[in-house]
Length: 59
Ligand SMILES: [Zn+2]
Image (tube, rainbow, N blue to C red):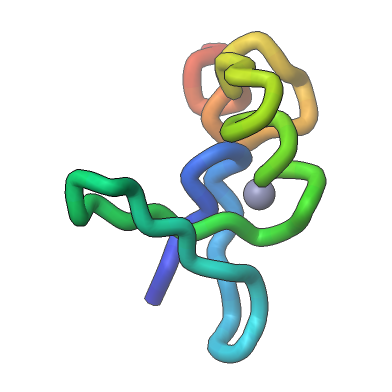
């Protein structure tokens, strides 16, 4: 089972994509939306309401 690195959603088999860093570390991304936010824009998922990572922080 894989979890999107940016939004924290669970990816079903055959969906999403894997991004591999030069260091060999790899992360899962559920959509191009998450890919762009994390890789191109360098945004912090905790600052966005639509990510599950943000929701976990809110008690
Ligand atoms: Zn995502």
